[in-house]
Amino acid sequence: MELLDMIEHQKREMMPESYKNRSYEEMVQRVWEIKEKLGDTLYIPGHHYQKDEVIQFSDITGDSLQLAQAAAHNKKAQYIVFCGVHFMAETADMLTTENQKVYLPDMRAGCSMADMADIDQTERAWTKLSSLFGDSILPLTYVNSTASIKSFVGKHGGATVTSSNAEKMLKWAFTQKERILFLPDQHLGRNTAYNLGIPLEKMAVWDPHSNELLYEGDLEEILVILWKGHCSVHEKFTVSNIEHLRSTKPDMKILVHPECTREVVELSDYAGSTKYIIDKIEEAEPGSKWAVGTEMNLVNRIIQQHPDKEIISLNPFMCPCLTMNRIDLPHLLWSLESIEKGEEINRISVDKEVAENAVLALNRMLQHV
Image 1 (cartoon, one colour):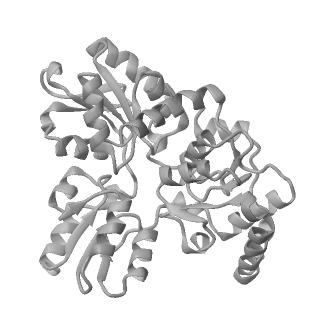
Image 2 (cartoon, one colour):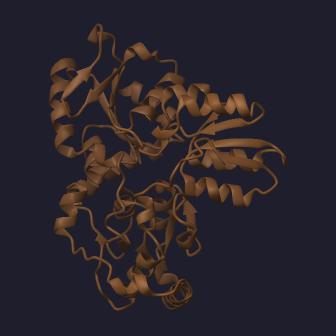
Image 3 (cartoon, helix red, strand yellow):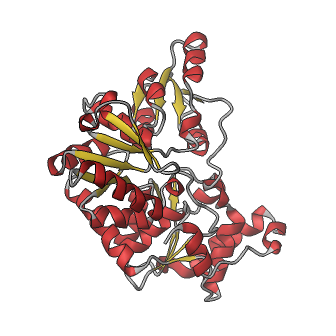
């Protein structure tokens, strides 16, 4: 069931207007009060891209899979208020027990990349690709995908990947089948395959809107089929940004996320996952200079944490991830006060059958990394 369907089927309410009129100080105090009152029964995972006004209350900060796994390991927590986006809360729900409840403070906090591959499009693509290539394809999906896409992949023998382990998982996938269908981010798929020595001319793109394979040449040459999806944030880092920086600040190192385009990754000094970016800056020498190509809330936080280094965004006009920014202090407080009152608002619950196959895909990944 996709995000819009889930919103229709779950109890979804809009935050009362009164929360917009409460002072920052009052809201901060109330959040701390509720955290103290609920104690170990409450767990607040916060994604790296969240606002500081939310991150200050997080019990753990990390990437999406790390947070979901941490929630699953925390058996004391009855209420998991996930400060991230919808697919992350879904993963947390699938990995936790039936006694644990996962909430998303604002159901509008989605992910444009995850929404670029829905289950109907994927089923249609699989039918057509199977007619072209037979039983030679294994599906892989980035964890930044809906539960139903993870479930599809798990059902067809595939696995999930993260930006940290994508190379390992792609290597594993090629031990299983001749070709790989990589969902939903074409850039991570392309960069990963290229790093493994697969030439660009052996990669095709699947367009879910026209329901066709975009490729010129002999189909038998195709090794990787990339879903035509992307991250709306990382695609905004451009070759022009790099060219401008090289001409104005030639001593600055460029560090980007592999969700950026192939051209941007190729021209950068370093490329890696969010954890890789954070670690790279932490390990860097004082006085070193860095231009970072990733989400702006995280870049700003890195700048604050490393005053001994010169750090800027690769794109000076970059905005924070709009859907991540849906989770703010008023929505967090509303979610916590609702739990305090015993109300079920914006709870994330994944269908059991969908969850079983999705967890198969997640476990296959965990077995090989």
